[in-house]
Image (cartoon, rainbow, N blue to C red; front, side, top):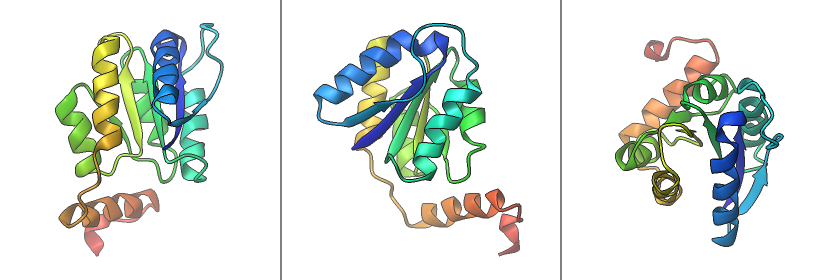
Amino acid sequence: MKLALSADHRGVTATRQLADRLGSLGHQVTVVGNLSGETCDYPDPAFAAGEMVRKGQVDRAILLCGSGIGMSIAANKVKGVRAALVHDELTAEMSRSHNDANVLCLSADLLGQRLIEKIVDIWLATPFMGGRHERRVKKIAVIEDGRDPSAG
């Protein structure tokens, strides 16, 4: 799978380790932004990775910041991005199976590396269920266009 990974300064270490691991598992990983550890504002890497998803340059993206909240908010402003802030195995699975999330946002401060890797493994392996969930995901796109999803 083609993946974009990025982080702000608080997620650098976890992102580097995750990029190495995912690459060794055969994924094509593109690290977006500067992982020097210097302070950076989370909207910058969130936008860069989100744009890669929007343009179809990658299948999905994984973003890390201190809490994961800022990355999630910023990434969800990119049209076509469905970013999910995930804290455990269940929310990883649900974000894919029910919401077809194409961007995973994680907390570098609250999750250990082992849990991050487990969450990522589940998120990458879980397919979208479609069915009734497809209708709901389509309504998200309607909202992105500035329209009322209940209008039909």
